[in-house]
Image (cartoon, rainbow, N blue to C red; front, side, top):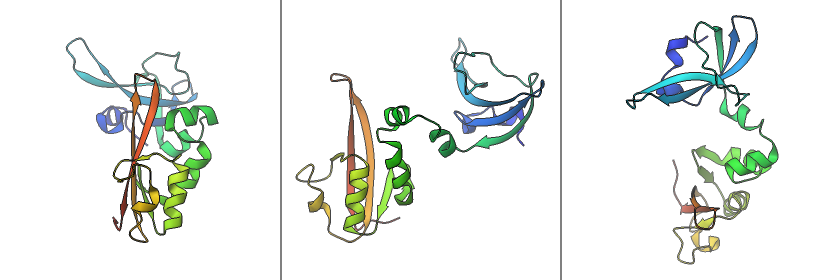
Length: 172
């Protein structure tokens, strides 16, 4: 179990907790940073499942903070369309990429075929560190390596732009 004051900090910002309220209702609350008029930061708990509920849940309302809910569990609750809008790839691709994932936006491959599979599951992002910009085959110099992904929003075209860098022969 967690202590109310313990989770109201930067470490738990945007984390979701399973809680029991004083009226014995089970609820999921998210820690969210807020600012006062002097730009001081503080952390409050809000209803994770009902975004229209803008009430701050305090220790006077919460009976127990039972557990933290893993992000992967929350991610899989999204509809397929919402998931793709938020993550840029279909949910099924996300699941298939999990065995290759070794860090935030970092994937390890152990054969050229695995590299091709990861690249396709990522929806073929532009290769930023290649001479031919999208020539995946020219990036394969070893039978193992890493692929790192990132992106940004193109405000002019209102469209996400996805990139990757392929590091043949790299490992962690």
